[in-house]
Image (cartoon, rainbow, N blue to C red; front, side):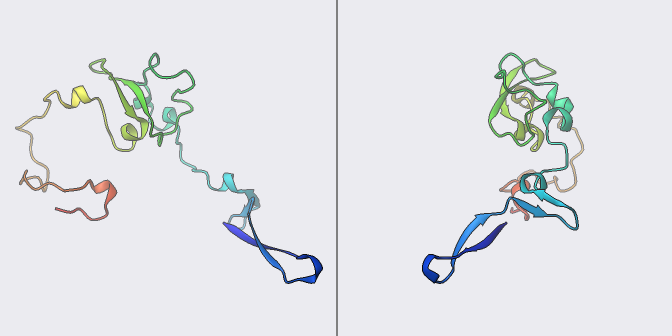
Length: 143
């Protein structure tokens, strides 16, 4: 949110518009609040509080010492090290891909745990008909 301020020019010339950023905003009949506080998320965004089961797979030895689940957010996109709870495989993946997109261990994903006798979900009767793009990034699914 930007506000427009006016500064008087010397010798009585016309006023000149100068832009500056507002440092405070007012939120819906509440007191004046600093801008960075007003834009904060109110949901837990730290890995250890938002997804403790995924935080338990954090690889302590391979990750840098300044990164740990209590301070890193669930939207962190840089790759970090994980250790799979079932096969003990160490792999790199971003926190955002693990928590938000639901990624997991690549070794366990490619291990052939797919059951061909499992009942197909609704809409999966035709396996050749797959969406071209992930639904997460599009409002409409394109076939």
